[in-house]
Image (cartoon, rainbow over all chains, first blue to last red; front, top):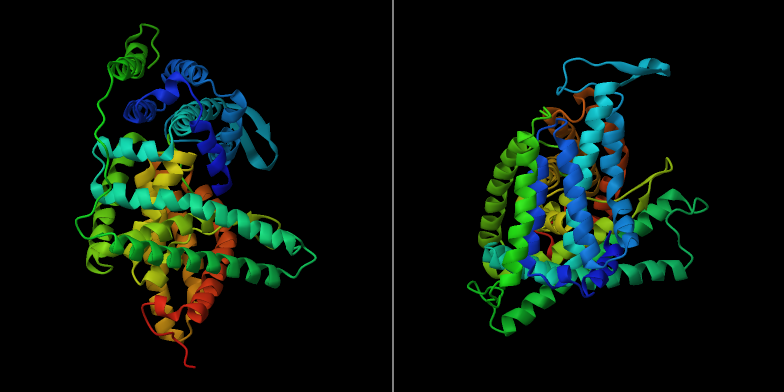
Length: 275
Length: 212
């Protein structure tokens, strides 16, 4: 995952309307979309709402002028665990339906149920919407801006300071991780090389991890000492510059929240009997 | 083991968030009292290290691969299960918000599983086993394995309560998979602990369990 850090951060340095938005607006909008999507019960109501949210996301992604390849690349790294759970749904019954209609009988007594397929699709759509908005947020907002935005939105000072420290050093350890991998490769060590004994490979990987742990602890000590030298103490906190939200940002937030709030409400009130 | 958004209904996710927030508050209190407030940056940098450690893919003899969660290692080395809660909370926030690994609404559940459960199981099983067998390395191996295994079972139960994965299938599949992956968690925890004992014994909160 840490390998993707530099790729993700690179995308945030591009220029677009979405990139230029205040980070608070993007955080609120993306979190609101996720909460709204999760709040909708596991019912067919999800279909129209998720479709509308996906269209909304696609518009925002187009405005961000990021390549669809970036989205696809990020999606592939996130999907596997969720997809496994979704795939299994097709073969099992769940508590959200009372009647299950088999549509295919498979060997080993397995059945594919119509209702389970519907439930799996509902889960997939909800999952897809949620991760799409997270991809949008993190691909268009620099990590430091995310932190400052969260601080301005009221994240406690204890967290902004510690998260800020952590985020800064993630990049340091990202480089360190890359260097360690290169060092292992130049010594012809590959963790998945079955010609080497498993014990040897495990020991080498464990030493690598142990070294990373010690190096991060020692880096922490050095950083702590350096901060003490610069007057760090119990009352210290991360300085976050005050920044007014522009009228343009307010307008964008209002329009976005309108979509996020009113789409589920309209779908729920629609006469087509979706619930 | 990172539960994504939409796999736990919002009311249940809110309950997990409340429980997680209680443990986060307790871990902050631990950081202030035990580590002293000023040393918090040290733990924050260590969290970044744990994040990098989680990226290291380690092969498993049966043809798959896995990576560490690191809760047991953090709890053992820093001498408190709250250290694991503190460190893993930071890691999970970054993973969820920047990488989309683990959801936002379900972050409370993920903090409970990988921070609270893994941290407490890892720490107290290490303490108990080390006191019983007087050898920290097998104790660390079992503690690491157990921390991941129990956390996986708790995840399966949460998914079953949410109605998004059957309990029996969840316990078997998550349990079996993490019983295998846990070998890595245990093995690396033990060897990394050995390395830390050898290179920086001063980092550890207690004398080693073996003499000599």
